[in-house]
Image (cartoon, rainbow, N blue to C red):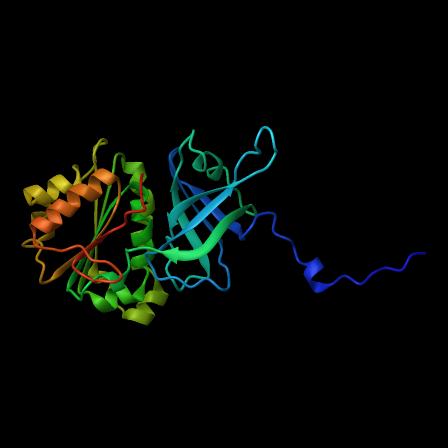
Length: 282
């Protein structure tokens, strides 16, 4: 009878199949183009609400060598800095190298997560102000999903306006449910104050399917319709701050509009009146 070797603690633990592996804990699909998922958070990961990390999966084996390389993309962390897990909101691209695989994630699967958060959509990149605008299209709402669950947002500003523009009504579901959950969050109410959610204004619009508010947010800003809807005089460099996350076209147009109101673009190293997430495309 051969002697049994004692099992060490390290050997008893599950060895991750992927480098920097984290385990998927929840997956929810909204449309054939949009889904979100949550995963475990590395104990050492520290980030500021609004930042992004590189996440991904292993690519297909090379036809000749059989070797696999990680497929990584920048994803905004949709959960706030205080959350014990990480949340991501993603588009599905059928022939996309990563999202074509990522959309099939199930609870218990593993993803690669490089724990080096960066990004410009953070409070430190803005000068103090009274009103904060979040301008998002599509999955560009992800960093703002983090920031509207962050107590610091409500401590810094008297009003927070979340605009979200999508093509169809179903694509607004994630944002709508998010805002509803924030308004009903008893823990946030306890930390920030009972009426904190009164500061949060949600302004969803669609560009294709009929909805209560139609139009691109850029057109609504240029015409002044958004200001009339919200009972606001306009945007001023003295009081207003803005964060932008969307398609390259939206980013370019909003930079022009915000600078027309006298706002200057800021950065972590030099805070100003508005910031744009340059890493986001889609």
